[in-house]
Each structure stands twice: as structure tokens, then as C-alpha cells.
Image (cartoon, rainbow, N blue to C red; front, side, top):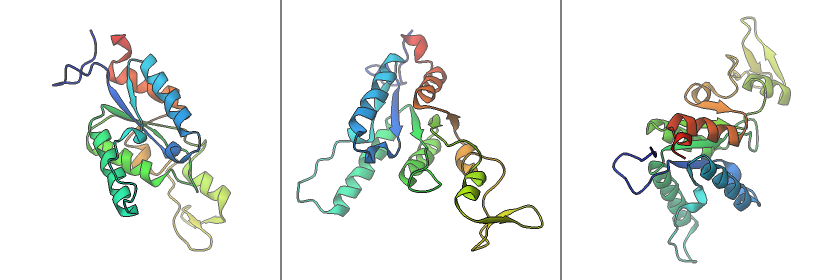
Length: 188
């Protein structure tokens, strides 16, 4: 039996949105091609953010481009059956903000999400390694310079991410976990 999205018999393979800051990398086309090839081997159809059609004139303003990208990516997520998300630290101690939005949006839609590439250790450990912190009398870790609390609880990411999605070490493992959850591998 092949997996078919309910109400759409012409789409036999689950569509997986490939979220992450990879879109900013110079080798993004190769990254997305490799992820899509792995999707295909698992009975999935990978969809990259760059697959969103952008019908804009070359003279379009930055605001028009930004809006078109937002609308295109939201439409791709809405049309997906699941999401994998590259949650590697990006320009700091946290994942890419756009990817975090896409994860939250997918979770709100009820889509299964599997994140990957989360650095080892807890978020608090990574922050303490990067900036001066101290532990108060109650054992709460704060930034030494500002007193701002560093989220603890032993989570690998902010708890709103780590408690709402599955995590896997690699993109391949994230895809395999999502394929199993969607029953895609059994349909090959």
C-alpha cells in the first residue's frame, strides 16, 4: 500500500519541508539536492524553501521580495506532511530565527517535525562556555554582566523547541525518523 495524503490521490509520497539556514549557504543547491535524494530513497518528496515560486519583477523592492519569500515558504509548509529542520547554532548560540519560526508554524499546523544538528550538551552549557556566567544562591545560572537568566532544565535547546519536536543527530536520521512516523518507507 502506498502512502497517499488524504484527499489528494495524485500525491503518493509525503512531502517534507526542508527547513534550515542552509538556504543562506553558497552550496545550498548541493545540500538540498542531497536531502531530496535521501527523501526519494525513503519514499518521501523533499521540498526546499527555494522551491517556492517567486513571480517578481527584477525591480521589485526588498519589502516585496521579503513578503513573497514569506508567503511562498508558508505555502510550502502548509502543503507539506512533515518538516525536518536544521537547528545547528547559526550566528550565535541559537538556531536560525527563520527556521525556528517555520518549526513553530509547522507544530501549530499539527505537522510532525524532526530537528537535527543540535550541538552536544545542554543549551545552558553552551552559553556558559561562550560568555561569563555565574550561579546564584538558588543554583540558577545567570549571565554575569546582566543577570539575565540562562534557561536551564538540561534541555539541548530552548524548551519550547526541545519539548515540541523530535530531535535526531543528522539530517539523514531525521528523515528516516520522519519516514517511519509517516509510514513512507513501508510504501516502497
